[in-house]
Length: 582
Image 1: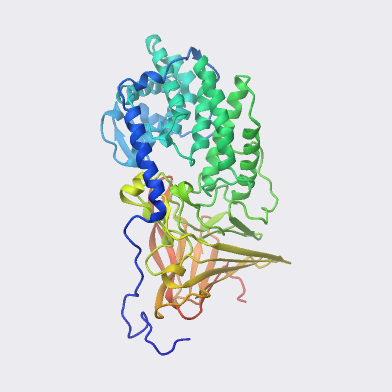
Image 2 (image 1 turned 90 degrees about the horizontal axis):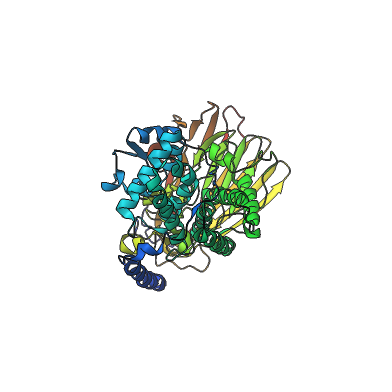
């Protein structure tokens, strides 16, 4: 309890709560990574930028091999638009016969353009689409055959190589006779560059898989080497990328889905050319499939955590060779996520710290965040930020998740400026210690999760307690803040807190007259009451990223202040409209 010292933030105290600001300098823990990246990046820029370097890439290809198949659903409308001269990518548009000779409207557009994300849709347009695809591929080569840091960025290169390998046979069949050797050389150059540095551990599996797929699409000595070396590198990379429970090392459910789709393409392509399938690939497919079964929610999509959006139900279904099992998800965490379920409620909670180092380049600093589905209606979600929306880094901060925040900061933050560009905007900040405890009883599940991310700034720990009554389809929760053992504050203050619940776009929220409850309705129209004993309840505006496009949305926000020398509790509940109060 307080000793009578005025508490900052309470009536009569300063309006703004003092918060210790982080140093603006480069943390010493990042010095080795920054120094190493500076040296290696400059070395590769000078080597790959040499005038004769591109001649080392395309040789040794004699023709076509197999016909790799992409299992992802195709956007045929996008292909129709490109045939009409309009490129619709990453929420932006451009009308051009040659989109590579002018500035792109956004960085996300440029990434999709150079990654050839448009090529599958174009291939769905028959012979005309294949002919246009070949023309655009040769145009790209005319502008960017010489290596450049952006166009040949490893991540962009992996997607371009993959898409070209899948479309190679159809484009080759419609291209002019004189252009066919050049077209094959362009495809081969992408695969060969993928096996060369730089790259980094995050994304290594995706690059190796794409290189091996290029090798399957072509024939000749270079193609054989691509298959052999690509599969060898892939086996090593999968050990680091896919955990024993099938989760992706980035902790992004969507990243696991995309890797699974790439491996399925590779598996079939190797079958086509009568090449052996590495045991590591088969094992990784099995593990990723089990994780996908865990992550798939009743609406057919994935939870939006750590740089992974909810994806599309059709895309999730395409990665699964059979029907999804109707059995209850595992009670054990997968990828650090815990699932609770009742006949009408599905809850996913993040019970692990964000990934660190290079794996955090797409992670979100939103510990203890939750997503909640009521039936097939996704009501509570997260901001949905993915790498497709690179300009919206703020959505990766703690306020972008359905969790509690203190002050006006974030437990960790993406690197910005030149260090962010150099280290791929990875998360930086004090390491988080996240623990959880789950207990299952008859007709109920109890989950406690806590983290120490607010300890450096406020000396407080945050615990989220979730109690799911499976008979009443009712979720009761408590947010608990209390002083960390052994932490001695310079002086007690009142830290402003906010518990945020981001609503899925399309969910309606009606605040009651007493400002204690909110009626939520999803697509089905069924109502659910959100109630809280927090001092201030409101429905605020928010933004939500959907496939890289920013949409206006809403969020429930419960606000108050917590003393740093005492315990604070905030309770909230979600129950069916019309349910009897307990």
